[in-house]
Structure formats: C-alpha cells, structure tokens
Length: 461
Image (cartoon, rainbow, N blue to C red; front, side, top):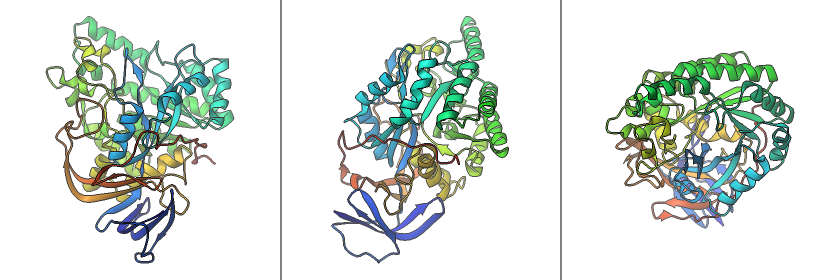
C-alpha cells in the first residue's frame, strides 16, 4: 500500500520546505518536490499544513506505582492519548523495587505494555537498588534494548541512591556505553524541610514547592555533573525546572562534558502560583521538581533556544484529583507526585513557536529528532527520510483549540492546562504508515504499537 501526503510543508530541524511524502507500507519511500508523485492508493491533502516526524516523548510513567497508588493512565489509554496529540513513540520507565532484579523488572513492564500499546514504545530502567548483581545486570538490559538507566538523588527510602552508589552505576555505564539519567534534587535536605513544615502545621499543597527550593535542584544537578565528570559517564538530567540547574548544565556543556537535559511543558507554562490555588486545587499541580516562580520560565525558553536544554518531554504521571491527589489532604507529602500532559506536549511547544520563543525547526528538534538521537532510535524515528518509519503528523498551524478535561483522552479527571487557548492542532497522525488519528476518529487498537529495542546515545562519539 502506498500513501501520498501532498501539498504540505515538510519540517525538519533545518526548517520547512514544500514537499510531498510518499509512504510504502510502514516506511517513508521518498520525500520529493511537489508534484513528482501523482498517484497512490491513498492520498492525503496537507495543503496549508505542516508535515513533520511523529513526536517522541522520552519520559512517561504509565501504570507507575507511587505513594500507595498507581498513575491513572494504562499503557492502552496513555498511548492512545499520546497519539491524539501527535506523539508516535513513548519511552516509559521500568521501576526496580528494592530487593528485585533488573531482569525481573523488565519482564514485569513488558507484561504491562506488550499487546496494549497503540503506538511504539521503549523502556528506560529505574535503578533503585545498587549492588554487585544490579550492576552486572545493566549489561543484560543493554542487550535487551534498554540503554539508559535512571537514578534518584531524591525520595530517601524509596528510590534514593547515595553519591557512592551513583558513582558505581556511572562507572558501569561508562564501561558499557549506557547513559545515566538523573532526578537531581537534594532529597535528604528536602525531607528535613518537609518535616519541619508539617511540624509547624503547614500541610497545604504549596508547601510542596516551598520545601523543594530551586537551590536544592541546582546543588544536586551540580553534584551529579561532578560525579559524571569523575567517572566519564554521560549524564542526562530529567525534568529540569530551575535556572540554577540550567546554569550548571550550560557550564558543563560549554566545558565539553557529555551532559544533556530535558525540560517539560509544565515548567514552561505553569508556576508555583498554580500550586497555591485555594481549596486544595493546588494538589493537581504537585510534581517533582515542583513548579517554580514564573521568573524561571524565561531562562528555560532561552535554554531551549541555545540547546542547553536538548529535549522536551512530559514526565507524564497522572493521578486523578478525586481519590488519588486527595490522599494528601492536610499533608502535602502524601499527595501523589505527577502532572498529566502526554497528549498536549506537541501543541504546547508549538505555542512557543507562535509566541516567538523557538523556531519551527527547534520545535521538531526538541520534540522528535533529538530524543530519537539521544536514545538510540535515529534514523528509524525522528525524521522523514527514505527508510525511516512512516510516523508522520499533519499539523494545522492555524487551527484554534481550548484544552480541557472534557475533551482530552488521558485517563485523568482534570487538565493541568484547563482553559488554555492554543493556536495549532494535530489533524492526522500515521504510525508506521497506518492512519491512527484523522478527522474521522481514532484508527489504532491495543497491540498496534511495537517494542523498540534501542541503541546507545548517538551524540557520543
């Protein structure tokens, strides 16, 4: 079967050019000047629209255990919502529990995801129990297509690793060529601040932000960078939210160190003012790192322009306001941490284009091409070129939409962006050549998505 997408502006990190895209089966067959091809089994008219590679959300948490509950999106609902928003690949996290092996953890997450995803998916591995056996298993994960390992400097007693444990894991990552991903917040200090706030009777959601100050994200980021420099390990800072952390990343990159970082839409558009909403509404916005003062947003946009922030992911980890977020009424430390967003990442970043914060090329780069290269999927993903998977988004840059829980497809009872009015909207999405989103509705089913065995980071020589 051949599909022709004609009349559109094809986008890449270099910008946009008028071109037609010919798809044969599951792959792109050609990208050519308009009119070169005139027939196909299916013709999609993209006149006046952008045609870009499907989005890659490199940081999601479907069915993740946290705080005595689980994130509300399953792999089925979460990948369906992602597709509606123009994301055709997610990379989720397999979560090692203390006392368990990495191999059994990976098996468990395959049981959750395999046969249930509407789009393609891969895994990172969360390492929460560093020991000789775990370190040896990292190589086995690499052989199984998992080439990145996330560690935490936060959440003592749950995910937290000491500097010594991080050092050992980084040494192993350096040995096998893998990438260490880091949640960089000083969890020991944060727990002390949280305990004091609760002892003083301060239990409202905004205290989550006050007890996780940006300086402690900056300190932890600097410490992680130092450990990576000592070991020679590449380092990827996840969900960077603060100017202090960005400064540390920029300094390391300027010095030639293999340090990379992502940010998320919530840190570009939301703030601690949302955490402070009355009547416990602020609980909807509890995530870690927390939402910051608005002044940090300008720094993050600038970091995206300069490539000190390489990727925009969502850290999609949804918990319903009713029954889940409400577990923390009166005690902010018991509010499940996470914000829903996998469906709206592409649209929210396009709003940055509309506002003049980033270019069209940078939009595609941060949302698709760079995550593909960062996590060993390029050129299969992240580009429209002969031989690449036909993951394609036809995007209407002039369409207007208002974000709302009433219309989104995520399995969560609120929207963090309720009432946001955006310019630009996904019109049609193809996943490996199959139309999964169109004006006619949703065309994918559970099991259409395939597991992606990933190579090493392609930014490392």
